[in-house]
Image (tube, rainbow, N blue to C red):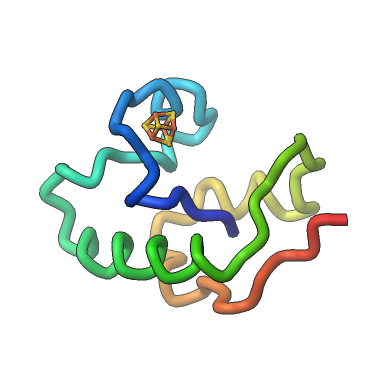
Length: 82
Ligand code: SF4
C-alpha cells in the first residue's frame, strides 16, 4: 500500500488519470470513508519512506485491484522498498 501526502499534494489531478485501476480519487469527493482515508494518508505519509523509483507490482496486485472492499486489509506497517 502507498499513500499520497494530502498536505503536499497540490490537487493538480494528474495522477488520477495515470492510475490504471482508478484508485486515486480527489479528497473533495463525497466518499463515505474519505475522512478515514485522509487521516490515514496524512499519518502514514509522515512515517513511511518516500517512493523515489518504480517498483514491480506485488504478486497479487491484479486480484487486489478488483477488490473494492479492502479498506479493512490496509497495513499500518511501512512497505519494504528495497
Ligand atoms: S499528481 Fe496527484 S498527488 Fe501529485 S500533486 Fe497532483 S493530484 Fe497531488
